[in-house]
Image (tube, rainbow, N blue to C red; front, side, top):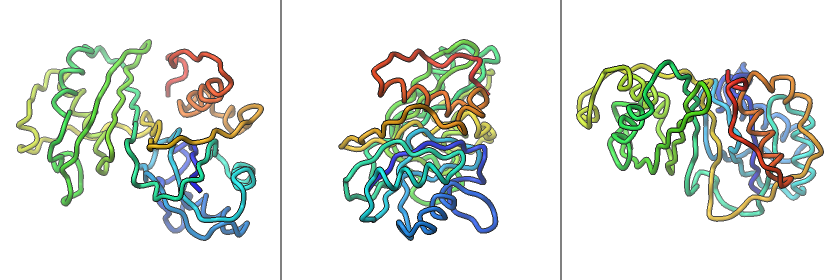
Length: 259
């Protein structure tokens, strides 16, 4: 089965399992093995340390029901919350599209200049200057949409897959452009160091496939979520997702929810 879940990435040393430190994947595996549900999982996305998620996906092979598996996971995990499932038997890496959202504080940027810079990164490019990867660095970014919400900008990235640190490096470049450091497509051939945007404002909003997930119903958000509700945007979006499933309208995030 495939399971969709959210997590507060600021509480972990990244997604991928590592010895001696808490990671998202490591904590999930610990519970699955303890309850003899599954010994391994396959993950759709491996986010960096500090990056949160609303809609990451894992695959596990088990005879247990989704209700039971999700109930056990949510009862035994902190800062991780499972909220949907699919019976599809497929590797979650083969997604149609991944949607990331970066929350950029407004330090006087012009939205038109931010959008101007973002347009340079659209389409297919060799992004070797924006990642540590040295192989398979050509990919296509389908869209980068920028909108303003109170005192920050929301930057939505959509692509089939990404490279290590790619979004954070693009955000750093976009903000440099809006600060007067102009460039064009020569940056794909001339390496320039724009730095790396902080990870905490970045959320993996959803991993999308050609099939739907069934949302799990719950009466309210768990207490662990409300403990950090005002400190991390992932909890705002989790709350909004719950409202959506109940058929209620949820407005855009307000500035008081930003970190």
